[in-house]
Structures are given as C-alpha cells and as structure tokens.
Length: 419
Image (cartoon, rainbow, N blue to C red; front, side, top):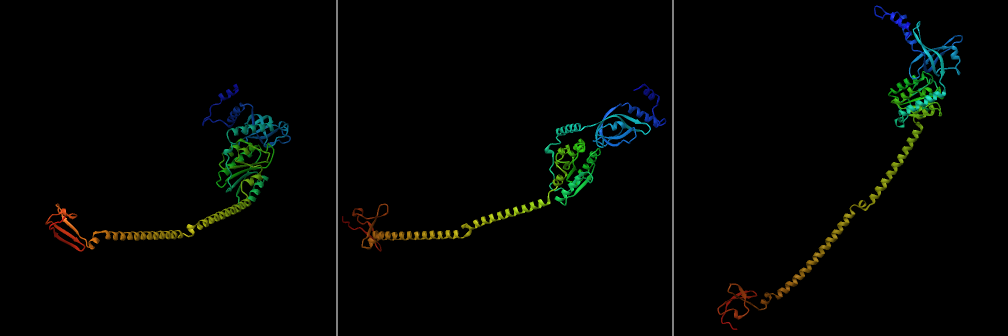
C-alpha cells in the first residue's frame, strides 16, 4: 500500500448516516482496491467482438464456458488485428490483462495487453485430461449406463433451431413410429452460450414426467465447434440426469466426451432417430411372426395331447372298462362251479364210504349177530357193573343174569352151572 493511499484513507472519516460518503469517494476507493490486484492471466471464450475501423480501442466479451459469468475486455485495436487467424465468437483464448474500474460509469473491465488463442493441440490435451478425470470417477463405466425404453412415452430433443440434426431425428423417428411424441428444445450448439443453454434444456426435459429418453443432437463440425460437448459441466449434468440420454453429435469419426458419458452413443442424428423408437413395420411383422409361431406351437401341442388321449383311450382298460370285470366274474363263477363240483364229488365219495362202513359195521356189529339167534349174557360184578359172561366159572349158583336178545333183554338166575 502506497503512502499516499494510506494518507487518503486516514484523511477520510468513516461513513455514517449523518456523514455519508459521496459516490466519487466510494468509486475511488473501489478503484484503489481493484487497481491493487495487478495483472492476471484469464482464460475464457470470446464473444461480441467489436473492432470498428478507425478506432484505437477494441472491445470484446470474455465468457466462462462453464458458468454464466462474463467480463468486458478492452485492448488496442492493433493487438486484435495482429492475431492470426482472426478471432471469432466461441474461440478459446488466454488473456493477460489488468482489472480496471472506470470511475465515470462505475464499470469494471479487463485491459488486455496480450491475447493468446488456445490452439487445437492445447484444446485436445485439455479434453484428454478431462477424459481421464471423468473416467477415474467412473462416469464412463458401462454398469452405470441405463437401457433405453422399448417404446418411450415421449422423447426430448435438444438441438439447434431449424438444424439438419433436428430434421434428421424428427423425420426418422416419425417414419419408424408415427405416433411418437417429441418435445424439441432449441439451443445454441456451439459458442459460449451453448453449454448453459443445453444444461438448462436438459434439466427441463429431465423434470418432465412424460419424457422417457433425451436426445442431444448436432451435425458435424470442427473440433472448436464441438468443444461444448466435451465441457465438464455438460458431462456431469448428463451423468446426473435421471432420464436416459442419447448422444448424437457430429459424424462417425467425431467423439466428444458427451458420447462417453451418455447412456447410448449414436453415430449421427439419423441413427439417433432410428434408435430411440422401434420400427412399427418391423414390430408388426415380428408380432405376426410370433403369432404364427404361437399358433403353430399351440396346434402342435394340441395334436400331441390328442394323440396322447387317443393312445390312452385305446388302452383295454379304457376301451372296454367292464370287460376285465366281466372276465374276472366269469373266472370266479368257473372257479366257484369247479369248487362246487369238487365238494359234491367229495361229499358223494365220503357218503359212499360212510354207507359202506355203516354196512360193514352193521354186518359185524352185535345187533346183526343177535338177529341171527345169538344172545349176550351179562352178569353183575362185585362193583355192580354189568359184564359179559364168558365162562361158567365167573358166576355161581343163584347169580342173577341179564340176557340181551335182538329185540330186548330178559333176566335169569343161574341153576346148577355145568362146566
């Protein structure tokens, strides 16, 4: 801090409601603070270049590509004319400038004494460094990419106004599926305003519940033209979106970082129009084919089941269910009849044997002998039991006897037994 500034500050009393500072004092103090910053190197994108012939000073706006922040830059006209190739809107530059505060208008600008355009090699190197950073964070990982819906309710399209990319996406999508609903948001697709506008459009479509997939499309262009689609802010916005995003930037050789972050990369806007919706003709043919296959499969299954039923129906147990029962009943009746005949035969044989035994028994029994004139003489032993008299010595004179004849019995008394 210079001694004059210190003396000026010491001589100026603090402001109060009773003793406020005039505008010139406030402006001078702000200018003092800003002028103390010194020269700085600033990087940004050039917009609104104003270099009128015959003037000594040129004006341009230096804009931050990742935020909605810009500053006015003044420089000698000869400095701007010395740059080859000439600067144009959207060019990336590095500026060596000193912040300047104009007291009369109360505005802040950068007074540049050197402007260096950022070459293609430097741009590509920065994109490569950003690619490695995003890859290390996993933004390119295949597992985080979401599948596209088969038939989205609505498709969001972010592209330039009345551009060939918009025409290609709309024509191809509607040709494949005429009923598709596409909500188009037109934005800048190159230059300093591209990234903020695309990010806002992406946020708007992502919040729309009727949008199931978002397409970001742009036609081909130079590396500088496609720089917004390798911007870190846009890549992170696409990675954090809740709706699947399709990248259709440039042509097949073009590969901005957005292609790596998006859920699906399409080589051209035409390819994107064919990717987001199915082909109604192909799907109709596939439905007919599946119906035919289902019909043939069903007919084959029915025929197989009919043959199986015929085979089951032709089995004896089902063709004649009562036949086996009747045959078993006949067999049972046969066995019953055979058992009956065997029993009758056995009974007859046994009856004959019994009659023969009875005849023999009758012929050999005592009754038959008695009928031929014989008699059985019995006496009573000492125990009072009747016994057959076999010898005259077994009884004495006067012993009672019982004589059994064929038709009855008589009683007698022994008189003079004769040996």
